[in-house]
Amino acid sequence: MKGLRLILSALVGFAAALVAYSAVFVRGDMAGVMGYLRARGALRRLTEGGADAGAVAAAHDALRALGAQVGDPVLAARLVPMALLVGLAVGYAVWRIFGRKQTQEGRPDVQERMVYRLAWRKGGVFTLNDLAESSPLDEAQARAVTARMLEVGRLTRDGEAFSLRSGTAQSGGRA
Image 1 (cartoon, rainbow, N blue to C red):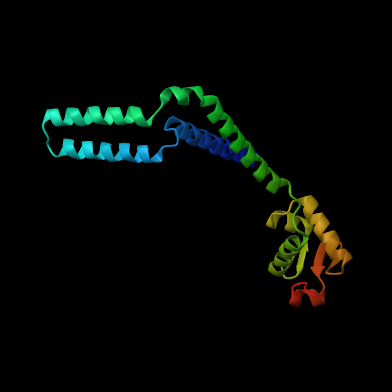
Image 2: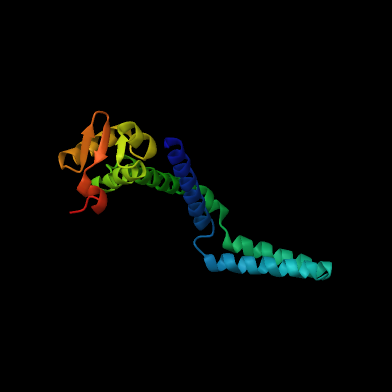
């Protein structure tokens, strides 16, 4: 799971760095970018339409001049570290968010529902091995939730097996 977390954080960070670099490159002028794209489309239509070489060359020159107005490669090159810092910050934020989700303690009511579902599938009787293998709970969580449910009287223990108390199977454990 850490590998996926690392890959996701790296991808999101890299994407954020590219977006920051792109925004700096065009100085935030999205209208200029859209004008450049429209001019490039017009040039393509002109070329496909079979216009003479002079008109196509003039359109190329106009497109090149518009590109020089919209983009600022010198500024973008100077601010590459800022774009990388933005990417690093976003990647770190994603790493922290997903790390918090992984280390967060599971909610007891959700864990108990997992126990009830497994017990119902198994006919009311299950073991800790069944619970650890057939649910997202690990062995420590399975022990904790069964101990909690034994304590409040929702489960009974018979050797290695656990079974639902007769009143909790029908009501789903709700009071």
